[in-house]
Image (cartoon, rainbow, N blue to C red; front, side):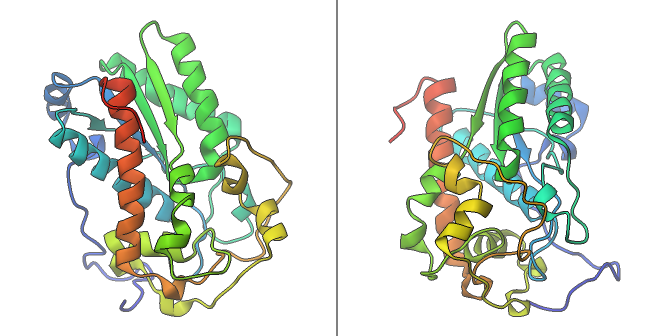
Amino acid sequence: MGESTGGKGDGVLYVQKGPATMTEMSSHDLARAREQTDVVLLPFGALEAHGDHLPLGTDSMEAREICRRVALRLADSGCPVVIGPVIPFGSSNFHLGYPGTVSLKPETLIALSRDVCLSLYQSGFRRFVFVHGHDGSLPSMMVAAQILVEETPAAEAMVLNWLTPLSKVYSTIQLSKASEGHGGEGETARLLVTHPELVHPERSEPFHLTSEQMRKLQGPEHIKTGGAIFYSTRKYPNDYIGTPGLARPETGEKGYGVIVEWICAVIQRDLFGGAVVP
């Protein structure tokens, strides 16, 4: 995938496709968009180690891309939305043993999310869609959403965990038949689609865990079934799990397809009175 930038040089690192998030819009742009909708998508990312083959901001990039694709598809369906600013940090204490990881305490993330949403409420947004790129933040996101609707007279909020529908098809779209997780084939494949300049699968080696180890390390194994189990895991046994070298852009496209289809169906049903989610 090319040489690592390593923070050197002034060349273009990657190209970001539109539509713009609120970060790239002017205040007047946003005011015009607000005339069309009061729905805002909030991408929740993280800054944490994903091996030597993926950037620290992988989760933020994924969350932004999911929201970008959702916004485009909803616009085509006559359901306009605005993409809010990416929340770049999450609850990542289990990766603090690896350089560059930044982790917020749950109460900090809750307070940050609340303040962001209350500010956007002042801008006229009333319907808030929390979209994660990092499952470790889901519990805090849910609390923040609950606080938001309790503190404001007209707000609605939903927290969408796309891991549930994606987990059902992983075995049909991935090449790996072993345990895949954080920074593995699936996540690497999705970054190959959007930020290939930053992906270096050749720097990785297969790293797998037993099923029992995965259950204790991977929150999604529990969250995706409707619950969660927490362990005092201060450090992952590795900064990625799986075989990143098997990642292919077509796998990433299939993954994004499943995620976006499900999110759009939920939003259309619950916010725009559309069809029932399959």
